Image (cartoon, rainbow, N blue to C red; front, side, top):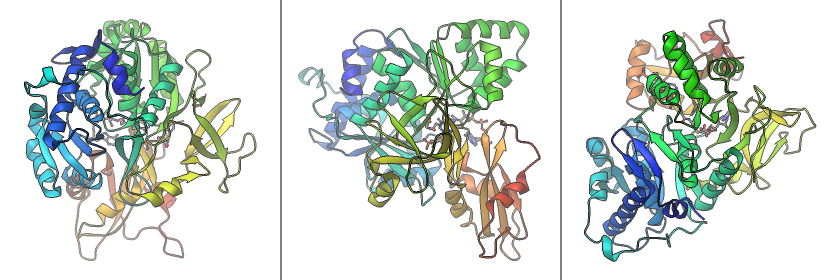
Amino acid sequence: MTLVTRVAAHAHGVALVTGEATVTYAELNQVSRGITRALLRLHNVADLNGMRVAFFVPPGVEWVGLLLGIWRAGGVAVPLALSHPVPELDYVIQDSQAATVVADPASVEGLEPIARRVGARFVTTAALTAPSGAEASERTGGDPFVGPERRALILYTSGTTGRPKGAVSTHANITAQIAALIQAWGWSPADRTLLVLPLHHVHGIINVIGCALWAGAACEVPPRFDAEDTWSRLGSGEITVFTAVPTIYHRLIMAFDAAPESTRRGRTAGCRRVRLMMSGSAALPVSTLERWRDITGHVLLERYGMTEIGMALANPLAGERRPGRVGGPLPGVKVRLVDSAGRAVAAGTMGEIEVRGPGVFAEYWRLPDATRDAFRDGWFRTGDMATLDKGAYRILGRASIDIIKTGGYKVSALEIEDVLRRHPAVADCAVVAVADADWGERVCAAIELAPGATLGPEELRAWAKGQLAPYKIPKTIQPVPALPRNAMGKVLKPEVAALFDVGRDPRP
Ligand code: MLC
Ligand code: AMP
């Protein structure tokens, strides 16, 4: 069973609700089949046979139709981030060796030149979804090209070495990741969820779109997260399942607190009809959990996951959800805590989380060494440290100081430093995470200017925006005469971080 076969079996019921349309499963299947046919025609093959199809398309019917359509055609889906500037898109398209780049008609100008440069075919969603007249003679069901062990999806994720790596999941991985959540969280066709997350990461793709489609539930797909719009949907009483990152809950709390009393009452009442609200992708501050409980009556179900593994740990659907803990292993997932030598740690002792199970990804794309290093005896090494306390895991941070989580996005300090050093006025720099009430962690950079150079922080930020995703741009840039270093010349990151410490750690 794959997501494609599941969706093909849901004939009735609402699949997606966008600003423009309400689309049934039958209609979604029709759209995705049309895309399959168009992709196969474009390449003049009967099976894309693992070709990568990168797509730059806003969340909506075409995005979902593409995911399913690429899979049914035997291709590997590479969803592109809508917020990324050209160099980041260029990197992903090139690194994934995409055979085809799909863009919505509004983005032709940005994407077509990249496709041309890398020798990929370029096609718009309008062309892929245009009626071909050949429908009647072609098959209407099944997905003979989608073998479970085939590669299905490449998502790019930052690490402590080099540029972002493409994490490859097979259909079997995706099926296992989704099936665990369907079981753990009781998804059913009666559910209706609201997508407020971007569609280039697992939280949005697997936990929202994947689960809703697998269950035959309805998914509302607004164009982007907006606190007021989200409140109006949560307040409607129609949404049954909602998941977001801590930054989004923080924003929703601020919007709630700013609303008049009568509006607040309606929002609180609407939330009581939601059956499940979840948080993940970054540590949920206990203060946010508590305020959210005051506002909505819901104790957020916090869970822990990662691009490479889907979800691994979660608080229970029924039973006690412990603040500051991420619960225990999800169905089918094995988790252990080990020391640096890979030995299981003693009870109550901190160790690195290692994960194994059918949901764990297959490989980093074209990086066999990195793939090998990511595993120990068949266990995936997450790089996250935790303790196990009365059956519930507590995440204590990361093994690497150079991995930053900002607003739910994982970014690499080293990647940002590499880019900033390319500016001619920057002699050296150090990028660090600083605790922040809204973002969880805020990206900050200390820079040493080249002799005689002048460069203001805003000027450097503006320049960096042309190179890096917006969430990687340092929020604060501080010029320093010299970076703090040890006797070996190594930059002392804790001392750099202290430069930005404003004397408060808003996250307990
Ligand atoms: C946007 N900005 C960010 C940012 N998001 N800066 C740092 N960190 C972020 N996460 C930038 C904007 O580009 C803008 O820059 C400025 O900050 C203010 O933006 P905003 O309008 O306030 O933000 P918004 O666009 O509303 O985005 C906030 C957000 C978004 C929280 C909705 O960051 C988001 O969708 N986060 C979720 C990411 C996610 O899905 N992660 C899951 C990964 S999977 P400027 O300069 O223009 O002002 C994973 C596994 C698991 O982690 O367990 O789930
Ligand atoms: P990504 O690589 O973008 O998929 O992000 C995965 C990382 O997010 C994990 O390795 C953790 O560091 C972090 N993460 C996810 N969920 C949680 C959580 N509930 N608490 C703390 N960190 C989390």
